[in-house]
Length: 462
Image 1 (spheres, one colour):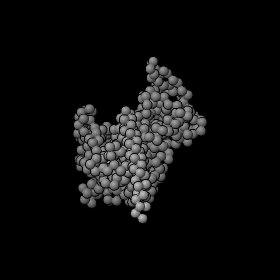
Image 2 (cartoon, helix red, strand yellow):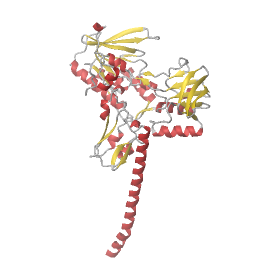
Image 3 (tube, one colour):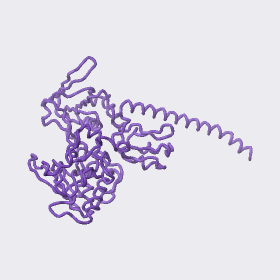
Image 4 (tube, one colour):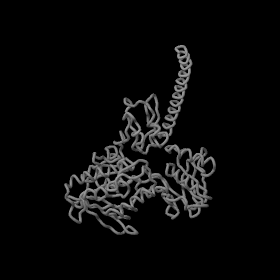
């Protein structure tokens, strides 16, 4: 018996050694690939996070790689030297699955050092700005993820309820004016009802806010969340249309005081309340005001779409968002921009029968795309489904054509394309002017660049 066991062990040892060697070789290959990816991220400039991102405690991390596997955005994380590292930080959208997957609590998703970024308002733990009674939730705080925005909004309203002490404001003053009817704004309104606070929800577009700007069938939520009054949502993933439908259902079931097509012009202090001046109507010529004890700003960072500032941009064929690519067939289309939104729009349009799609980007290459968008646009370019013009700028827009210049080694080349529709994805101008005019403080470096902010004005300061 013993000899046979010894023989089996002798045969097993080489096999175990071979498996160990193969594992070490695979680990070295993974390490080399991760280092090459990090070098590529640094070269592209995509290694630096733009907003929320994983923060890793290297002393606690055991290098298991579960966070890497859990992340739905490929390339954000990798294991290097036995520790998880952020590789493509710009690709992180804050899903938080990596934080849940970590078995030792070595990782959490947040702003980290970016909390001091100079384009984010200074906020307290309850989301209150430097102006007492004025709160900020959602994208303006630097957190773009829906579940975080909902949490911030409910935190702000809970603080407002605590200060109100169960006493509602006397009409015509409301307890809280909420600006923006996206996920954060809706959560703030529902929480206000739950807390017995009077409210008004102001939205320049329609219920859904920034969600309405997303393409049709876009996946907008990838983790289960809980909304005030509605409770925990049934699914962990929602498409844009499904979430907007959920919002509309909430408006039918609960007494939401929503005013759509209403743009906020200014927020000023008058005595112990805020006066929120609005514009509404087809031409924006109806001026109104809302008086509120507190204000929750739940606006998106996109703000006003950035224009190209070229002749012909006022033509009706120029759009700054794509809602439904299926509306376009057998058309010559131009998409301007180099981010994920522009690339996704170009790919969606190229997927419709007969379309001839060109993508114009002012830089020499794509820098901060999600990995799957990088691969898809490269394949579309190789197959001829999308023509990509790098180092190009639109210089003129005509009724049936568009003119661009392309920077080449020997100078500028002018290109004229047939065109029935032009989609511009050049980002937007965030609503920082509204915040500054209301007295909201930003970090000192931003204030120095923009000039010292005015103190919160009152109507007597005019």
